[in-house]
Image 1 (cartoon, rainbow, N blue to C red):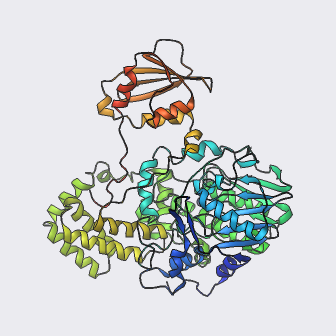
Image 2: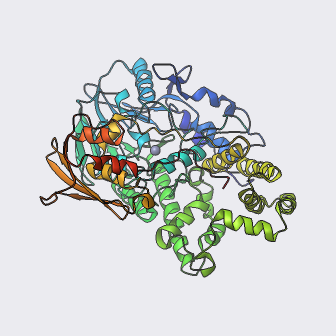
Image 3: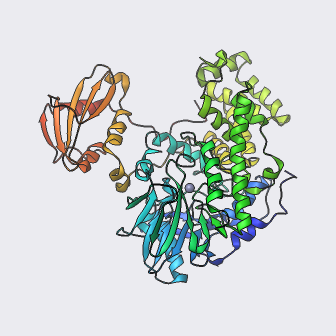
Length: 599
Ligand SMILES: [Zn+2]
């Protein structure tokens, strides 16, 4: 830690550069008064770093918690610190083009208002979504009702909903840990999320793009603003793009290069991102844009000014991602397993000394494991790991072998005294999984998690550890599922709607059920047949004519209504109408507050 480059204050200068005004107070509410964003709750970060935080993460919290309107360059502005992400505003001939309108409509509206207070009542004349993650489009109805050009990378709509759709409830529950949603914001609690302080909790929306960017090198002009695009699909997001504003000599890097080592596999769970492709896109970005931009900005964190500094920043980000990919592959081909590789890979000194390679949302340790997972999966090849007991069953046996719960706690204390908190956590986790009533083990495990959290440089690690400690003490915190947005349902494809039914079928309950339904989606002019057999709900588009048990004629909106429990009113039915009830009878529900730190 003594080696951290605290003398390098460049990020603070960049984060303050172009400052125009703050939102004061920085508290944003829904119309009925519920607080969805409160940046003032992070004011304590202006103090010196206490013993309850890693100095590097504290520093990142100081930088990320700066909020307000900033000038990036002539005609380009950013509102930062009013959500997890940044909103960028590019002034055109008639109004202003908004890039990435935050997560919540309330935050986006507040950001636009702050901008207008200082730059005049310019109409929003266009929107750019840099990528298909909700922190870059969810607030769009806070800045426009539509009727303007909305540009997004190819495949945007499919991925905007799909990426977090199937495993959404589990991700939402685990996001409580990753973002530390239930933690107090304090020097002992939540001090950020790496990419920003946290996620806002307002109203989410989605307006489909009017134009999709289909290729790298494509140029478009919106409200007189010329833009040159580079597509970067399949790296940080399945649909993403960088944008050069040639006339402004400004480069928007979306989320492909930010001031931290990004996550290849967020702790809430996700499909592993392709870091090899990521590094290649950054190489391509340097080839396309270096020397053509005097400033580079992204939809998180602060900009980097100066053509040379931009190129150095991009090169180091690129080297970092390439290095962690290549070194993981080199070592796994020598037989090292994921935890073994994670223990030995270190960044080269030149990268280590650049703050923006530090892991605040990603980390070397979990990114290396993600690369291993992408290529080799969960199994490390060792037969001992092929058919292990599940966690609780293993825990019961370990505790028995170690001489009971009290003995495990005594062993754990020894490792705590030796400052081996990692092993103490493993031991105590066994004690708690074997016997949730072992209060001594629970309390001690909460203490160990707290110390691990306070020592973590990575914000999402800290949040996970501290959330685990909190739940050991207070019980589970249910996830808030923000999927009720009508825009999101409208964005679902029919295929996704049927998939969402299929993944809710309780297999054993449906083993002996057989039924078939024809769905005539009259507004789309599409027909589907779904069948249920052997607990598998199968969909088939454009079925041949033939007798299904039930035929339904309906609109897509009515299909969504069926799914969300609005019933069958207005849906024309032919055939055996009990079929729908039989289908509903075998559907299961996700559990929003499943246990994580207990069995
Ligand atoms: Zn983002």
